[in-house]
Image (tube, rainbow, N blue to C red; front, side, top):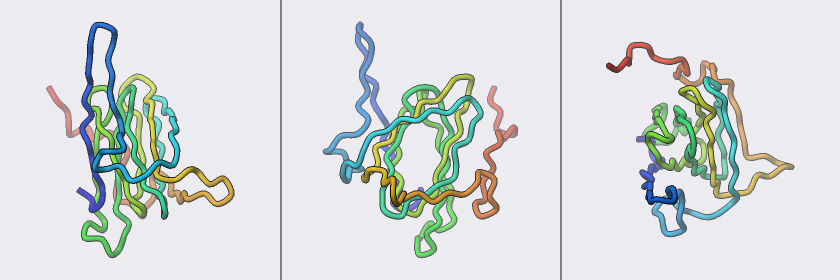
Length: 155
């Protein structure tokens, strides 16, 4: 696991009315502080990558559909410099991922439905000076390919 990245499995609590799933609590180990809450979506097969923040920590999950999340440690002084983490998050595997500053991250909606992504960063978005630094999904700076690995077929 990339140094500073934390993952918390989320628990679904069903009853006859529906279900509830807590995402982030102020008494969670991964919680630092509140900045804002936002939601974004991605249509099937769409990649939203790469970006990093220099000040904020991102805490995010997929609340509907499935997404492939990839992280890349760009911190040269990190014990995990150059390491990549990959997670499949969503309906079939609910979890929240906490991504520290200077770790690139992005996601791809996988499956046949729109993926719904909810993020609770530690800082609100600054419209005048955005804490967001982007690279293209196919950049040579990150050794990762967003294309489906056909060698990982199951049953």
